[in-house]
Amino acid sequence: MRTLEKRFADEMVAHARESAPDECCGILAGADGEVSKLYRITNTAHSPYRYVMDPQEQLHAMLECERRGWELIAFYHSHTHSAAYPSQTDVRMALQSGYLDEHYVLVSIANEDEPVIRAFKIDEAGAITEHRLDIA
Image (cartoon, rainbow, N blue to C red; front, side):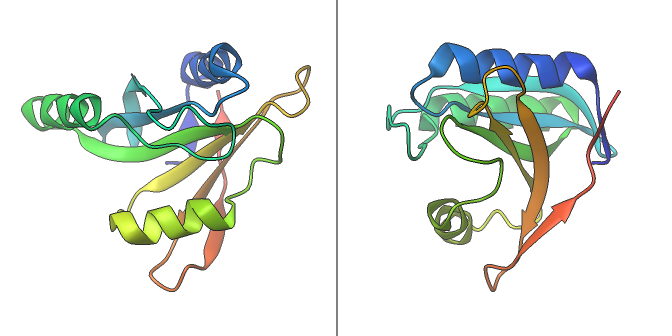
């Protein structure tokens, strides 16, 4: 995933703002690395410091992706008071989940007037690598 349509970026920022002060979370899905749909998923942790995706909503999104022949491209979540960079909690949760082929997209609304969106990969050793993300 190198490019994200502006409408999806705007939707993630809107989701982050609506969920604040808690983190929001969701899934970006599509084919060939191109996002076709954003799934808003409820953060059942209701926390400003971590997220837990509602398992039923996550399953629904994944089953719909399978039916459409889409792939899971990225998980996204917001940081309401910190930078758009994976926290130690984010890394630990990624390692525990086993989802290491997908991107992790973070939306920071710490500066309400200038939201920041960045994409990362987290490997099996917990190393974080930023991937270029163009919003078009």
